[in-house]
Amino acid sequence: MPTKIRSGYQRRVLDWLADGGGKISEAAKDLKLRLPHASATFKKMRTEGLITVDQSEHQKGSIQRLTNKGWNKLELDELARLSEINLNKIPTNAEGCLIARDGPMIVLGYLKKPSKEGFILPSNPTTMEDFDSDDSTRNRGGEADWA
Image (cartoon, rainbow, N blue to C red; front, top):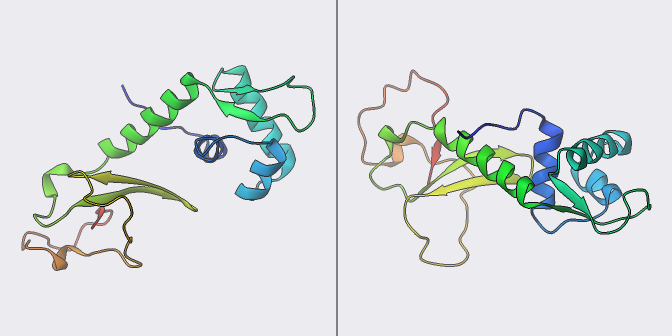
């Protein structure tokens, strides 16, 4: 069963590592984490088998990378986030949905395969009023941002 990653630091580091890996100091700088917090998070994830080190873990400047277990944990987190969305209220014109956003990291869900490799995300979320849907009472918060 998909489960969300509870630790915000851990999720941010796993997302960062999904882009190819790197040094702990680079992750701390990119994610705006204090180095001791980043180091502790990396150590915990190495112990859990979520990441591996290209060289000795005691060698300064070693490159950290996701393991298969780390990729799986990240994927299960994304599926858990998707399960929180009410899929019964998909607007008829929608092509996709912003599932989650954490700083610069986003998780998008597609209803159909994108027709192009690149596309522009709207700077403002598309509201339900922009679609062919009259069933929204606008009195419930937390609706997904459909595009």
